[in-house]
Image 1: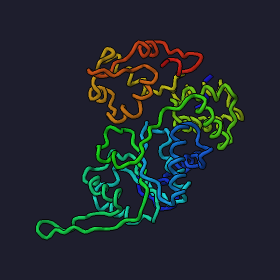
Image 2 (image 1 turned 180 degrees about the horizontal axis):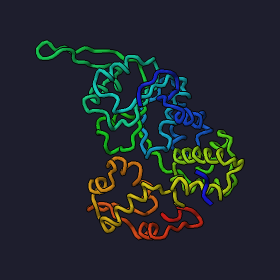
Image 3 (image 1 turned 120 degrees about the vertical axis):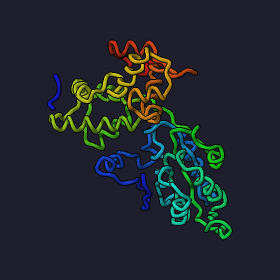
Image 4 (image 1 turned 30 degrees about the vertical axis):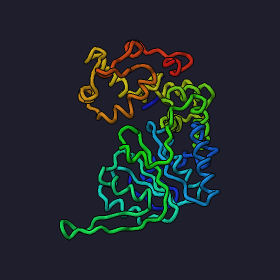
Length: 348
């Protein structure tokens, strides 16, 4: 039965502020390494780097994290800054349009600060050129004036640690990648880890789930903590309005129907993308530009948001000629079926 009806910041360890939704995201963000569930190998290696730097009484070396959105890149940067008790500044690649923007950020850093640049692959190349000496020698070489009167001015900047995050490692230039001492890739989470994350977030939000509902929610969370937490918040809204003290699997299923999320975690936009590939192009192969045009979606959105999960499920494959829908995708759209062990078994 259906249910009724990135900018720069300056204070220590904080993210860009938006309305209540981002405040809630900050509430759910792990505050200690022990709270950070999953990505154990990456976490272990990063903590060794931090511990060694602290023993040498040095700032940690520059670090780069890559992976799909929502896997915890920003959270790790927060934890690093907290671990070394450093000021934490946040900005993004598109926000640094000119060398002057970079100079303003770097010259206002405190000694030993952590600068986090999200979407670092979107830094303009001219800005990259000015960033290199800052990363290596902690100085900026700025050109003042034009033509014969132009002069080079050298500015010293405080020692800092740059942490970069990108969803498209291949889009970064080789010289910029080489300036990072360590590069870590974050992978999709395993279902047991997602279940633990849901339990922790539910406790922080004062929501009670039964075991079956937790397992079900983990299975449709796209192996991504951010997705799990976003779904959890929507379920909390429905449970509050419907006066549900405990979220059962039945109630969860009803809520997901209202949100138009199917039993594999596919949204209406995921299904629309698959439908376009199957109905308009007979399953492919089709290039990314044609697919984006036919669905009125940006190419980057398809590449970063929809495609990784659809490929993980085995619904889409990439070929030299373009994207191809598999038999699993045809079958799921025709008659959605869920394996009792969850979506993971579909890709095995």
